[in-house]
Picture 1 (cartoon, rainbow, N blue to C red):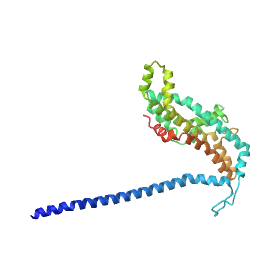
Picture 2: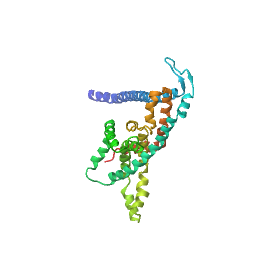
Picture 3: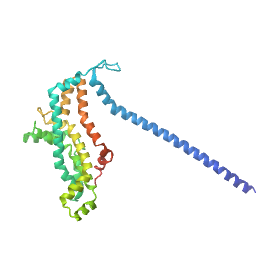
Picture 4: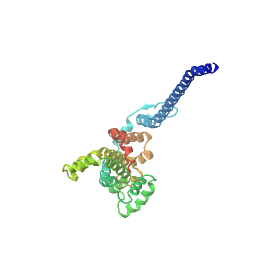
Length: 299
């Protein structure tokens, strides 16, 4: 009889224990959810401060006549700095040079790198992975040593202070993007579609342009955008070439920082960031879709 009573008591206590355990699990889950949201909020706040903060600083200084500590706001507002930038002939030439040279760099980089990207994606040749890692390693170390070595070669070939020298230097920063990302895009094209087109009587050239290149175009577009940004923002190598007559926007920033008020540098920085922002917004669909990340996962 006692055994039966004890068993009944244990059975009666089991739902209570389970209920208490469920309440504790829900409490810990709610606490974890709240703490997770707090951490995410802190991370977002830091990202906003460190990303939008400098942009807001530039925007305010671009329109402020003066801004002295401890004032929270500028003393007055003006458009004089924008007029200074647009009326300066040297700054206008730098903008023109950047908008002409950077697309040329992307074009020549595509001509050089896209055939190599297709070969890396479709052919298994000796030391293939070594070459791929070697291409990626070009951006893994400081480039100043490479540029200093190239300077002696440029002197021997009379490439100093020339547009050709600037293009060569800037192409070095685009090779990794224009090779790895298109190679992954070419590798992702199903071979079955190409074989089906070949069985239907299409030539190799037609299959390449109508199927392979068309399906790989989003990855190539991302590579072109990243290459343009790398060329457009390149300053060290271009400055080392000593292009006295072919200053670009990034190299002109050295002159602005040394010889102009900081408000002029703020205006020029905003102008320098406009092409990057426009291109990133134009290609955001493919970048957010994973094309950029997939480009560095080629095997």
